[in-house]
View 1 (cartoon, rainbow, N blue to C red):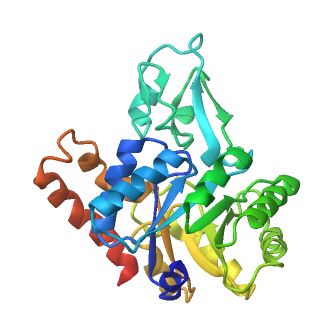
View 2: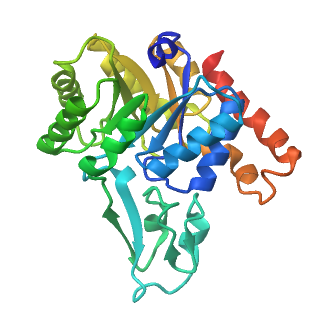
Length: 314
């Protein structure tokens, strides 16, 4: 059971991305990290994505892995997709060079690859890039996913709109009986407001049936240093000090230094969820056209992924 994995306090979760619906990339990421020892995978709430992950886990002969689907609120950056105004765009190519996902080609956004990280928007000098929210309708996406079986549902509860957060949380609780996860950070909430929101969300749930994913800087884990992961650990300390009956998992800017920093600061957690950094370090292998036919590609990616996974499992 997933709860048994969390109870080890050495759980590594690979975050493929709530907005990532690039099926082939997900298959490759799950395959590499499953072989490297990861047993918990965070995926978009998309049936095709989930099916792809399950198929590749079977192919890898990994039968003890767990899948989590993530859904967001209207202001969740993970639910954003970039849009380019062709009338303002001058085809300078900066957005394409900057995109860590390879989601932009010749002024066009490949929606399935875009995860709303905001890097293209920052480099555009013509204000040609904006974002639209593509939050999922829970009535449409969750019933078939729950029916087929899933191990965890995560709600990104980082927005300021309490009514929306609690409405979606109530729907999930009423339609799913398993472990739930709350991804929450201090971007728009004070320390006190963050703790109060968590308390209200878990008040009718059994102890230790909820994961609190302490989101430092979402989609910012490009570097492997203490500074990148500092906010995730600091947010974890706030939750720890509240002494709530929940599992704490670090996320947002996380990397191989996360658990080390947490130990130095005497902050406990059940694990680490790693997205941007985990994807970055294996990208050159994942992008190879001969990924599935050249053993040297996997032999190159595996030790890189395993070193990251082992930083949590050790």
